[in-house]
Image (cartoon, rainbow, N blue to C red):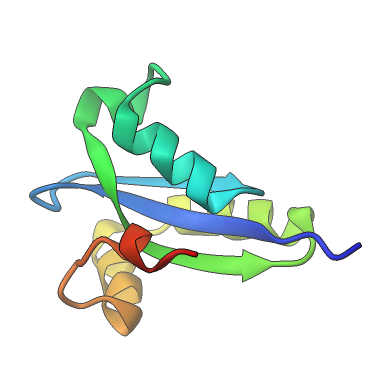
Length: 96
């Protein structure tokens, strides 16, 4: 069976803080970030807006991409987000 993995970027409401993560269930994970049920970085900095994500069929690729993005400077991350979401809309609204 084909499995999908996601590398994603969450943002604070004023777009000052970014969080990069990996999951195999983007809807559930975004919901967890939004509700703040899991203690940690996104809860502390209120990163509740999904601003970017990519899909992968192999977990190793998703994890490698996460590590790559985490190593980028902020400007480069912003440029990546701008390629699909320059207005920084919450993409969670588009998930099915």
